[in-house]
Image (cartoon, rainbow, N blue to C red):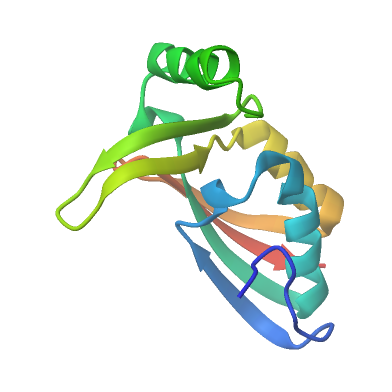
Length: 135
C-alpha cells in the first residue's frame, strides 16, 4: 500500500498505529501525509506515532558529511534532512534511506493539520513517541 495516498474513506478509524516508519516519509510530504491521517480519523480519534531521532542513527558531523556527499559528489536530489547510509544486517547489506525528523517543525505540523499532542515520550533507545488526538 502507498502510505502517501491512503485509500480509506473519511472518518473511518478510531485510532491509527504508525510506528517506526515516519522517518521514511519524505520531508516535503509529511504535512500532506499527516493531513491524510487526520482525514481518515474520527473526531477525537488518536494516532500513536514514533520516530527515530538523528542521534540514534548518526552524529551531526556524520550526517553533514553524508548529506554533502550525496548532494555534491553524487549530485543526487537529496533534501536537507534526508540521508542515505549503508546497512549491514544479517539478511541485508545495502543502501538505506532515512529522513531526519525535526521535533519543533513536526510538532507545529501536528497542530496545523488538526492534532493535539496528548503525550510525548523520549526513550534512551533514541525514539520519540507521540500520542496525538484529532480535533
